[in-house]
Image 1 (cartoon, rainbow, N blue to C red):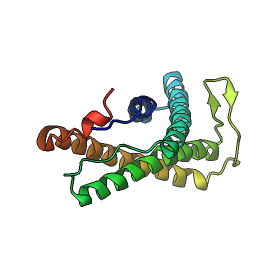
Image 2 (tube, rainbow, N blue to C red; image 1 turned 135 degrees about the vertical axis):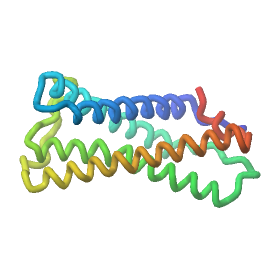
Image 3 (tube, helix red, strand yellow; image 1 turned 60 degrees about the vertical axis):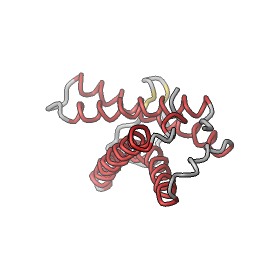
Length: 174
């Protein structure tokens, strides 16, 4: 069976690990009571991870636009192929929308993003107390949608590996 290219595989797993780290850190930091140095440090790290995910997502999208994905097995039903395409499309949208929503939430809160503590990112909006809760909610629900999509993605991969035994998972394994 045809496989994804090595850069596509690397970007897939790198982005996946970065997202898991950012999600885990996000859950941890919001559960720290008060405003502590540790919480502030975690918020910075979370933002840095988000910016890094966004940068790698741009590279991944550029790669994907210039390199076709391998074909699905001929025996895979058309509805499963359509569902896989839809889920992949949703994952791409979320990989972009979540860091962008977090970035704008941070700006609306009046907290600029300084990547790695060295590189201030552009400020596109002024602090906005009315917009802040909406962007916080959008960021949260996009993350919950990503969690559900991620679980579905993993379950589908495991189904193909252990039930269908059709080699779909092997296309993306390092």
